[in-house]
Each structure stands twice: as structure tokens, then as C-alpha cells.
Length: 391
Image (cartoon, rainbow, N blue to C red):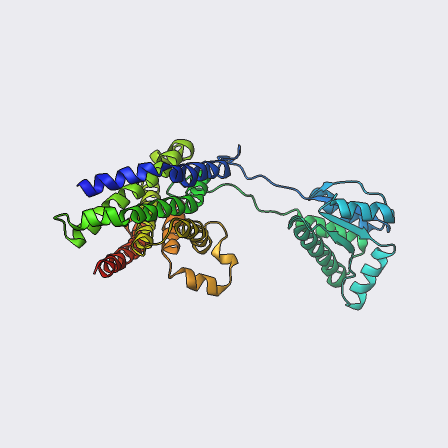
């Protein structure tokens, strides 16, 4: 027990690392995960892109296009001038700018009569988002619909536009649908995902520094002549390291529950419980990695490097900062060999669990168990390394 007490005094002597890696980084997570005012909104909001139309034709077809764009965007006014268009493009005044050239209506009807391609409009699409591209797709579909009416329905410009407007006016009603299980607040999920880095960094650096101090020659000599066996000393040291991990995990959990959980703890206790267990498993893996670094005799600077780079690597391969679906398939395959992938799989799926049943929760607990097995394996390797270094 004296080994455990000595270890905890060493940790307290290096509390600056806890302040930097745990407290400050967790507060950054609080800022990142701060909920927006409409997070709990139950209505579906329609975000309209900004668009500008320059009609040089004035035909019925062009007027139909102008009306369609006006109904599906927020119009901004741009002068039909080369300098004004260049200035609007540079300043990103509108997400979507369309120029309808003179004679477009006649060209459109000629194309329908000769079964040739629909004449294209001159467009400028903003680089700052996808709304301009979406607007361009909608306008293209609008023109294709009018083209089909003019081509196969023998309709003139007015009839083609009227039938097209009637077609596009039929839309589906959209409303929020709730699953059987109440979803966890997005802010709590975002906070937990951001905690991947501060948890790993704080636990790893504190545990590895603890082991570094315990492996100092005077301290190690005194413990070597104690009645405890080598394995017993390693276990006592690991218990102290485990306490560091639990303290860091508890800080992250309490802060998240107080600031972001809201009613989720009452409405979604199982989901929140699985999320907290996955965080605990990830924390224990971090303890094992820090214990391994300490057993290897790494210096303080090396411990800091491993804690920082390792935390970023874990965050990257877990997909909590950048979704793995956006990564090459090779990254996904590599991530499966790391504990962070199994933690994130359990954490994210628990947050959006559609129903709470044994069949739905069991796979998540399996992921938590796989994450824990990584920690057990690393700890076993650490014990072997410690035994070899002592011999």
C-alpha cells in the first residue's frame, strides 16, 4: 500500500500536467460542443441559397426560369455589367449566378423540335459551399422537365412552362420523425468525441511520468528490497496509474453531464451509460499505454511527444473529428487495428440508438469489450517488459 501512496504523491507533485492536458483541453471541448440555440428544435427549417438572375432574353422560358429560381432562393440584385459580375464573383455575393442569353427561348424550342440537347445557361457557382451546386441541379432539372413537355407534348413555351410549374409544385411534406429511443443531445455527443484527445494526452503523460519517477534508481532500489514481488510491485504501480485514469475520466464525465447531458440522462439512460462505459474503456487503454511507456523508461520529453501525437492519431483514426466515411478505404482498415475505432463505434452508435433492446445494445457492449481487450493486452506486454528490465 505504501507503493500506491507514494505513487499518488508523485502524481500530485506533477499536477501541472493535469491542469494543462486535462483541465484546459476539456474546457476547449466545452467551447467546441456548446449547443446552438436551435439544437432542440422540432421543426424542419428550409435554408435558401442566395441567387442572382440576369435575363437578357425575356422569353416565356427565361421568365419561367427566373420565377423558379425566385421561389427556391433568396434573390440578390447584380447589374448586367462585366465589372459588376466580376466584382460579385470575387466577393461571393451570391451562391448561384445565372445569365440567360438573348434568344435562349427560341434555341430551347428548336432543340426540343430537333431532339438535340437542352441549351446550357451561363452560370457562376460559389466556391464557399454546396448550395450553389444544388441550385444548379434544380434549375437543370426544371429545364429538362420543360424540354420533355415541349418535345413530347407538342407544347409551346407558355404551355411547357405552365405544365412544368405544375409538376414542380407537387412536393412531399417533411416533418421530424422520432425513433422509439430518445436520441442523446448532439452537444453531449460532440463533447465526448472531442474528449478523445484530452483523455489520451492527460492520462498517458501523467501515467508515463509517474512510472518514470518510480523507476528512478533510489526509488526503485527501495521498492526492490520491499517484501513485494516484482509482479506485486507492478500491480501496485498499475493501480496508482489506474486511479489517474479514473480521475481523468470522472472529470470529463462530470463536466459533460453537468453542461451538456440535459434531459438525456433521464430520457436515454442506457445510451448515456454505454457512452460513458466506452469512454471508461478508452481511458483504461490510455492508462495501459502510459504504463507501457513508463516501463520502457521513456524520458519526460518523449512522454509529452507520445501523449500529444498519440492523442491526435487516436482522434484521427477513430473518425470522431473527421468521419471515416470521407477517408480512403485503407484508413478504415488500419483503424480497425486500433482501440480508438472500437470506442468510437460504441460511442457514436449509442448516441443514435433507435431502440433499446438486448439485440441493439449487445453489439455496442461487444465493441466496448474489444476496446478493453486492447488495454489488457498492452498491460500484459508492459508487465513482461518490466520483468525483463528488472532481471
